[in-house]
Amino acid sequence: MTSRTEALQTFKREGRIVIVGASLAGLRAAESLRDEGFTGSLTVIGDEKGEPYDRPPLSKQVLTGWVPAEATTLPRRREVDAQWLLGVPASGLDVAAGLVRLADGREVPYDRVLIATGVRARPWPHEAEAALDGVFVVRTREDAAGLRQRLADGPDRVLIIGAGFTGSEIASICRERDIPVTVAELGPGPLVGALGAMIGEIASEMQRAHGVDLRTGVKVTSLEGDEQGRLRRAHLSDGSTVDADVAVVALGGIRNTEWLQGSGLAVGPWGIAADSGCRAMDLNGLITDDVFVAGDVARCPHPVYEYRFISLEHWVNAVEQAEIAAHNMVHLQADRWPHLTIPSFWSIQFGVNIKSVGVPTFADEVVITQGSVAERRFVATYGYQGRVTAAVTFNNAKWLDHYRKLIETAAPFPPPCPTPDQPVDAKPVPVDFPGPMLLAQGATVVVTGHDPDERRVTAARP
Amino acid sequence: MRVVVDLSRCQGYAQCAFLAPDAFRMHGEEALMYDPSPDDAQREQVLRAAAACPVQAILVDRLEGRDAAAEAMRS
Image (cartoon, rainbow over the protein chains, first blue to last red):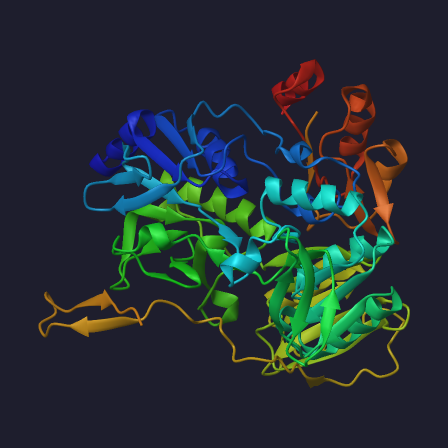
């Protein structure tokens, strides 16, 4: 055996791995490490109390009232024999010393660490208004349990602030439960930020057809409470007001990376930069060998998307990156795997199964390639500079694999319709995203030094 | 018992909804809604549904109960 192989075998036998983050990615990584034959000490740190649970059902099955929020504990694929430090967040990472610091002052040493701290809900920016009784976010089990109870009590009107996937799913459930609902969205339509203007228009029609009071191009400027501190109404930027006793703030997430400030890792608002094998990058752009990232906080280059660093808040991305990171943590360079899966996600709303493959924001044109928009059964294909980069299906999930192959083979855009149901109006239109393409936004740094051995970067904070 | 469905893999074949209707339901034409914590009385049906899934998207806890343990041993 070479010394490298020997060192790896020793590490696999008696090394110390710490996983920071005890949700889907953290659990799957722990299981995969044991699958890979790691028998050393394994510690999993999580800020929430209780076993790892699944989040997608929180905005679906839980809010419909079908299952309680506590019912979403994740099934185990195997025993993991780990030490679980739950209910205490990590507060710092000392890469040089190989230590994770906990908020309660404890220090946990590691030989290799996996960062999987995920995302938290972006709170309503005005603290006193956010504290009003009836104002919710939906990210944790407790959030969902609270909102579930309130929906069961039969509110007069629910206001959803933000029409992304979570906001739209909750609006759908309100209508299913016959609860009056207003959706306020700053963009021109629901889902526009993720899927573009064409799908946004279809989603708008869908919401209105189901009785949602959809207000687009407006901002909620303030939430007003009564004397008992209960939400009473919201004021909108167009001067109108909405009387509502429940408001759901669905303005997306904030990546949990604050604890890594000062760690020397390439941390930015879109997560921690890493290579496609989930090894974290430091501020200098150098790959670290003992720090790995997975899930919502990982920002990895994808070769299919011109090696741009992409971070994804997708369930399957967390699962796959956890497995890739676990594999790479216990293998030598030559045996490491890149994460090359084409991204995919799903959303269930207004009786429609919306699924996506690829990166729809990585596109300049979009076209309906099969099915019928009117029947809410179609495929929209996204292209960038003449090649297929993504597809979105409405009640047409069986075709996703076909489009995945088109993306993987850089097939020309627009692709031909694979079925006889060629849409009548199959003309590509500009994808028309509302804002600048933010895929590449990361850490802002300052370069100092002259000679190669002294040139380094430091993080610059505005 | 604990269940999770990889809905990015699910293609809405609805086999599970036929075999374990209390745990798996179709929402609209092809969207699946499921009970992540079905009653143990449904274990047989749920295991059958997981086995029948054409895209193998249903994961049942491998640590609970004898059936699950036996299944884990076989894999």
